[in-house]
Image (cartoon, rainbow over all chains, first blue to last red; front, top):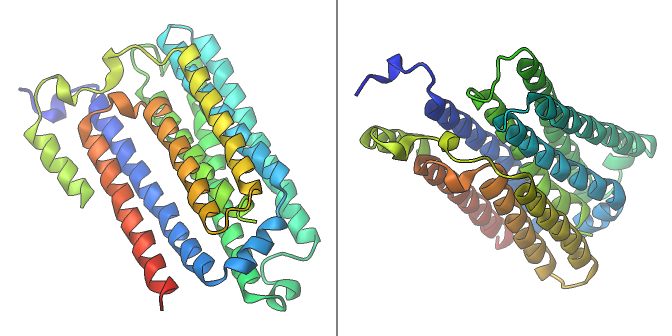
Length: 202
Length: 113
């Protein structure tokens, strides 16, 4: 049995390493959900009324966008494994566009909130009910951190598209694409929980 | 903790195909991925519909249950967890367990103070 250090393509190690990183990300968002659950228990009515003020249509659209983008990332991997790198790049570009659409939607949502006086540290929030102030704080922190992950994921997928184009990711050696796909699916997973907790508790 | 368990198991089983990733298995077909996507979209619609019905405290339980089903679909099919090595499966399950304990015990503590 040759020692691990001499294996050239340690896809098992790379996969395991990526999963371990994803687990830390799950714990990162998980602790924010702990905060959410505690304050939800304490200020249930305020949370419900604040939830009504978020735009359900935009939230639902963002959910659909991320679900479809996960699908296109899976298709990109399938295409590459079926020796069709061009199609793979097309699917990745689709995923990247969907990711950017998500961020644009977020921009409009946050912009609307800022315009109505609900920006972090505003007089309107601090003079209102405490539960609402906590809800908005959690909203900005969780969706902000998630948005940052969407941005990072989009850039990683763009990098993958370039690497496929320059034949650094191929049909035989596609672990980088798989790991990037895993990251993107995690971003989608987190939003699957964020969406009902903020938009559907009304 | 789950990192240590994974390492111990990884070292114990460092032989044979049980440690290989699913590189030797065929990729998820376009049709299969499309079916999973369809299920996810339907479940999204169901979640929104459930939220519109007033079930009181059971609303959030139902909604989180549907969210768990959706995330299981993404994990099992899109993230290939079905064909993944079991060190990954055990690590993920133990992480979720830790998080579940963290959330539920904290919630329970605060709710009944």
